[in-house]
Length: 339
Image 1 (cartoon, rainbow, N blue to C red):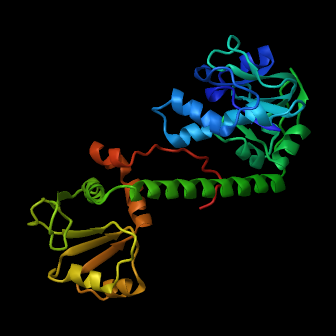
Image 2 (image 1 turned 60 degrees about the vertical axis):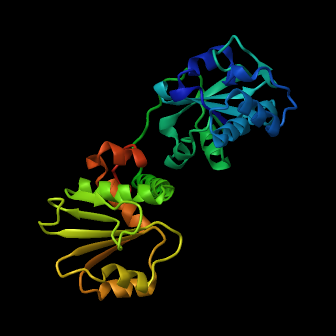
Image 3 (image 1 turned 180 degrees about the vertical axis):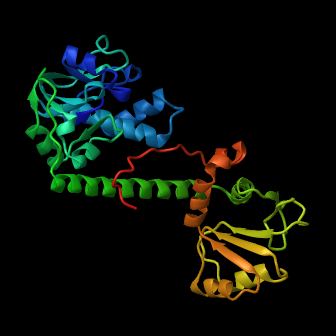
């Protein structure tokens, strides 16, 4: 079974249904040979989309190749109809065709006989999750396909009566949603850390300074060159006349920070000073021990902790700091999704 996106948000589902097709963009590539290879497609995309990222072109080529060469006559295909909360289920009945005048911008097509529809409300949470990919075309896993086929009804059937799930089923769905939630947010956290880690050293200093400003401090970032162990200085008044005085060291490299780095940083600090040591490479066990016995207040911040601070204060960041790690708010169901 293949899942096919009918345009952004399923906006072309009616055209797919009316013309009995599934279709893929785009017309810049021209008619394709049924024997085309992925390398051929990658070259075509590179020629016609030189401005696109190489990874994006490779992804487009992989999906279009499936339409042209992998899908077989007789395969099941489903398309999401979000407005009617259903999936159309059909059977592929043709090899690849070039249909330039059927769906604008989507000339690469297969003809389909639509035979059933599947109410989304009848599907399990696990199945709904597998159907949420942003890919235009992908293979549905066996469990999800079985669930969909089991709930297929005749086209045009009245909306189903969805019975309240039993306590056992409700608990199972809540547990599944909780696992999906945890996985989704964990992936989000890791990708944010990837974005932070991709910054250069100077940008990392500016990011840390931006977070401190969002927390209500004024900051000074050291100029390139010898900084005597202080990359960012922060205080309430910006001059250090008002407590607290915050001294920040930023190390943006792969190796762990060790105890001697900690001693070098806190040396010369006076009682009442607050110190932050940021290391995207982490800290050794001895470094943590050295920080605990330091005579000044010292907080060690790793990449995950820096990511958490960025997210916590993101809404208060200035435009320049946000631009270094652009993020978008994600809303997620809050009922029984776990910690």
